[in-house]
Length: 120
Image (tube, rainbow, N blue to C red; front, side):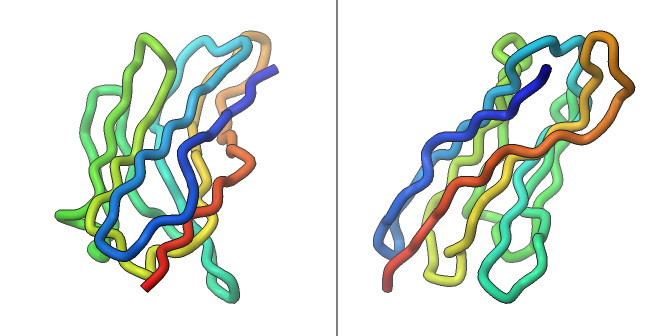
């Protein structure tokens, strides 16, 4: 069974930084894309940034130049470095991975979510 375990959320003042981490554990055979989504109250879940197994990235226009996504394939871990945080970045951040687990079909997995709150 595969789990995505997130860490690194919290409360920070505007202009500050946070680093989120997410590790896929369990019977992982191969991880394709990994990424971060966020959902603020009353809003739909939206893509923040994603990264392929080869290291290609894409990100939302709202975070370009402030957030950086990276991954360590040896550790099955994806990171989101968030700098120059703004109050509008406040949301629950969810880790996502498209992966193949032993004995299962390739599919999407989600973390439990971690709260990021940016105070003004």
